[in-house]
Length: 349
Ligand code: SAH
Image (cartoon, rainbow, N blue to C red; front, side):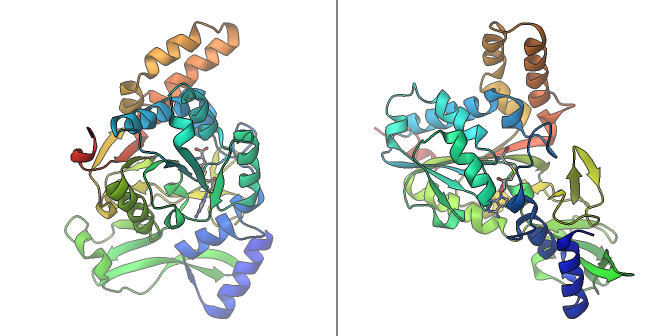
């Protein structure tokens, strides 16, 4: 049994079952036993691999897209360049390298990273190679100024609550202890005003998930973008709306039982982009990752890089391009939600 399992079992036995959100929060970010708090989980030797770790093109294209948006908005100076949950800092390093040639962009940028894990903050500092940067605990503490921000696979790591509809109301997934083991179960049915709008598109037996922390984060980003200009690119797996059980655990690139080894597996849920868009006070746009990268010119960028490669390096570069964009790989499952200012801010004099 993991030390965190022991701790959770003792707590549940003493005070009763906990919600999935409380379980996820401890599994991911418990200061001593949390998954992100204790390790660097990325890459082939880790538990999962993300788009920036698959290819440098991902961070490059996102960087140039944000820089173009900054140019379109009249080069506001200074501005916040931010990332939520930067992992190893690979995306930001690629973004900074690709935007070096955009005149004035680096001089105007004040880099802020929102990262809860001290282990990953240290890893990010290495990737940024002494580029000046501030780490913040949450999006709410970002400065009140123009904001150009990216979040890749950040929202899927935020704790969710899960509810099953029945004839009497909604029953929440809670974690209890049975025969000395952590066991999921359902609470008694309750009528919930927060899920009233889901009565029209669900039936008894259906499952819906909500991410309680997400709306405040989106509000923090969108109020800054609405007031001062900027753009947000939020990339993740998920869809428009929440339908069904998407809570999952990944360890060594394999799906595992999320309750078997708390603190040792990555726990995530699909992102409900409709819930994010509803929390935004700015206009938004929505696309699949494949369409987004194709429109930004990944085919051309990939060809330029391919021209310098041969042998296995070329093979893996072509496989990476395919993996990021193909509908059968990440191209359709992953989506991009962008937040941008009202159109009168887009083309200033
Ligand atoms: N964007 C990176 C990493 C994705 S993993 C990539 O694409 O490779 C999720 C990241 O979010 C990790 O860096 C994790 O430590 C961070 N994170 C998770 N929950 C967080 C929270 N509540 N506040 C701040 N950072 C968080």
